[in-house]
Amino acid sequence: ELQEKHCYDLLQSKCLGRNTITAKPTKRRNVRLTGKGIDWALCGFAIANDVNIHWGERGAGKTRLALEIAYSLMNGESFLDRNVKPNPTKVLYIASDSGRAPLEEEMEAAGLHTEFDEHENWELWCHDPESQQEAWGVDLRSRIELYEWAKQNKGACIIQDSAKAIFGREDNLDYTNNKDVTQYLLFLKEKEENLDVKISLPSRIIAGIVSGFISAPMGIGGAVMNLSLIH
Image (cartoon, rainbow, N blue to C red; front, side, top):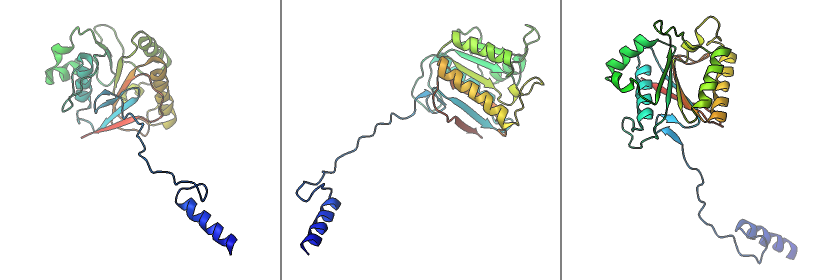
């Protein structure tokens, strides 16, 4: 009976947080949170050091959103209802979905055409017959071009509009093939991690890839990508 009582007392002590019958119970204390929250490149819209994919149907306003995001990042201005201002950032806008003329029409419709002209933080890659420029794709040569640009512009933001269009050329990967799309997104993540750049993608489908645009600060470590829906 004495041994049973001793076992009972010891069990009771352990339930009360004691290591032995004579030890004092561990006092309950506050546990401090250590998470720092999300590191935003553009508060509420573009996560720093990650690939951001913005999805929407045709005509939902993906390109308009991409241009507005570019404007805010270029000028270090807060976006929509957010009060936090980003650091002024160089933006490379890859307009594979349209070309220069349609993009200029979108800028004029948004009242932003003069805001981008000759801006020191703005660079545009797109199809343009006048300057004999072809659309950018995801073939090896194009990836090397992007890598070299990112090396020279660390901390910049790269916007690819749209995710589907950059896969669209005959010599490119198949945007409906998950293996091809995964390979390309991993390429973007690696560039972010090594070169400290942001990347943003607007898109319309991801069976493969969403048709819209990708935006992201390159310089990343995680495996998760940020997906936004545009209605």
